[in-house]
Amino acid sequence: MASTYSDLVQHKKMGEKKAFNELLLKTLPQVKRYIVKRLNTAISKGNLPRGKYRPADFVDQLFITAYDHFDEVKNEKDLYSWLFKKADELLNNTIVQEEFDEVFFQNIDDFSKPAWDAMEEKFSTDGDGDLVMMEELDDISYGKNNYILNHVFVEDDNNEMIAKLDSEWGEKNIRKHAEMVLYHLPLPMRRVYELATEHHFNVEEIAEILNQNLQEVKQLLEEASKALKTSFYTRYKGIN
Image (cartoon, rainbow, N blue to C red):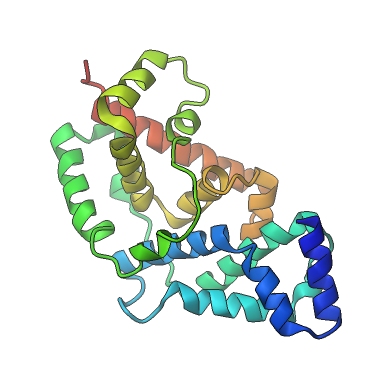
């Protein structure tokens, strides 16, 4: 990232916009994935109309923003998080703020297995089964979500349950359930959790990206993790 940053500085100084954009493109796969996932959720929840926006729209705008405001990046360490910050600002200017799903969040520990199964069936159809942008994820290099249980149960001693979840339900079902729960969580909570677990930013970096204070980010991350843990317990507590 250090050499990329210095080269970008030089391209900007020399007015070499094409070279600047070509080099910047190499740093964007994870930023693009972040954009794709936020747009998928916004479209499926009705916050944005289907077919009107594509990830490329925001990526193209990010190139313009990055070039025009690159002097805001003071060193190579800040470049990656600054790109996420600018992408998030562009998305926030377009996506209508979603409503807080209080019924789901406040009653997550009371859901029965049939209720979870019905929710997953609906999610598979409405949440991610028929979105125009899912193919955008295919060409993005990204590791498997095997982080899920480690993050959810990071301070939990119930290794036996974790082992059962892993062996009896498998990675695909675990990932599907986690994505469904995150989908129904409030937007601020979901953004913080995904930036921490998928993109490996620490709480200080997330606070900078989202323009939030450190304590608020910590609380949102804790609440998201707690909601996921509760959902696994309530749905899978009967496994043998």
